[in-house]
Image (cartoon, rainbow, N blue to C red; front, side, top):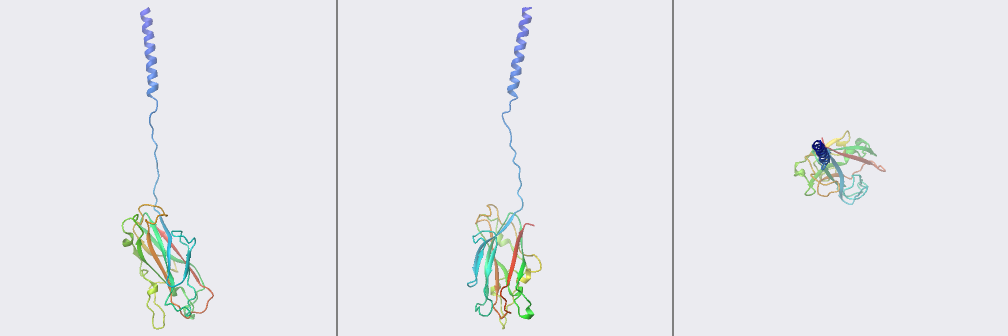
Length: 234
């Protein structure tokens, strides 16, 4: 009888030990954290610098390099009182993208223009061109400056346009060329491989050039044209 009781006590003790061991074994000693995300196609267009053809004023708002593009170019008087061959300037933009890109331009607002038949200044009298593509630094992907393509005849410098004997220039492209609708002027491969919009080393510099040959246009107190540029990643 005593032997049986002793055996029962031993079995109960063993059960307790096994049960305690099972509790310890089930305690969690490691775990996981899963991080999910994505990278969308992205592109940006910003202002970089300005160079006047002569002494024309121009400023971005804000007038800080690499700010969002919101530039105003003041041509001043473009009557023959202005003795320069052309009035205008070069607005340099910096483009960034993590995929193939395309840039379009469109005159989205204008005022003060008239009819050429009446001798008024028109959008066709403002020569417009794109050029001087250059990589900005070590964080560009490959050579986007060499790989990009300027559309049609937009790759010209209107300030170098040939004039006829009457002093009237023939512009390959003008603001009238982008007046009817958004028109692609530039496209190319991926531009940036790292960095943010604050980086000076991951972009493609592009000059947009504007020029007017001073002539005996019909007097007008003011004329204005706004060109909207849009960069997409098709």
